[in-house]
Length: 157
Image (cartoon, rainbow, N blue to C red; front, side, top):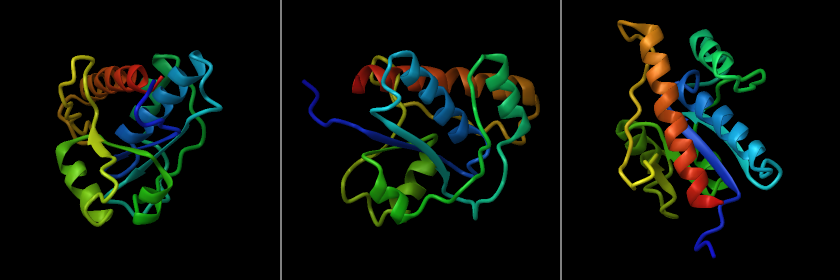
């Protein structure tokens, strides 16, 4: 029996155009594969964005190459209201973890954390935006996010 049933997850990164949308769509695919997509709500947001921006084309390409379906993603900010809507908040790196805690007035419900590996190690997913080798950076981010999503799915299902 699960201690805390998680029926909603939001992934947060900086701009909500690369990592957190990739996490959202990877998790949606994994949930669909397990027949859980109607039981768990998944979304994403950014701690440093005003919103209104489409998903980065490189992030879209990586999802397409890995056969992860996605729809028309428009970025939105992570707010205290978003914090209140979700039972689990996954920050994609340590800086975003700190920002999300700040935005939520200290994480009063203790639901903000980083991704973890299957053996419980915290994961810090580097932002691929602006990397020297963009293709490699987006592929690495995708692989790390996929591992984090698989581990989260094991934990909650």
